[in-house]
Length: 204
Image (cartoon, rainbow, N blue to C red; front, side, top):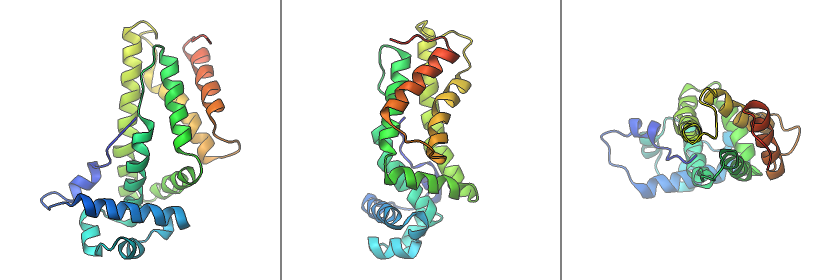
């Protein structure tokens, strides 16, 4: 699901002029630093020095360094994981999970793990993650399910929340506890198994 990570930041910058160039520079600096040394390495001081943007300007837009990294991460990954509707709902979800898995390869997956961990003790970061990543993507997943129910591909009594949890929860479990690699093959096998076992889907 795609999303534009502006919800939290818009509250912080209400009434102030915003510069797209400044935002891009700060995001790019924060993300580069986070990939270089992990999320804690991307401090406000380092971001300001690397981007050439004053700390006062940065604080007008974001409450802390972790929120900048989160914002930059979502801006980078969001366009890579758009939903693409397929004739069968199962294949729509297979494609979605494959895109997500591909987007989280390497440094992105490591960074997301760090951000999720940091969010557990940072209410602002947790809210930003919920508003800008979880809620929009979940809403789009629900829309796919509702459409599939209307077409008769899924039963009307299917619990959409449970279905989304079963599909994406498996991805985040393997991301956070990396006992096995996240791969395209895993994405297909896992989604097909969910549809076969939970909703009575049939393998093609």
